[in-house]
Length: 50
Image 1 (cartoon, one colour):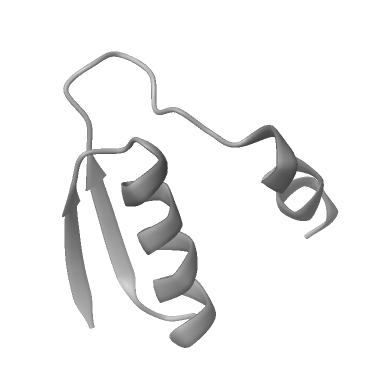
Image 2 (image 1 turned 180 degrees about the vertical axis):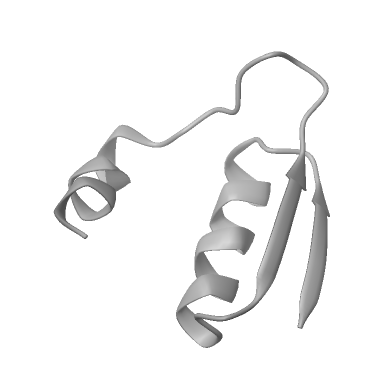
């Protein structure tokens, strides 16, 4: 599955995380207007632990 998410704020990041849980092999592309993609501090430990 290939998915493009427009907007990387909380909604876009949550959508990407949910898609990843549903399909580990999905190709997820998140497009954000600014130079940095926002992230949630509460989810950072999960990302680092993988």
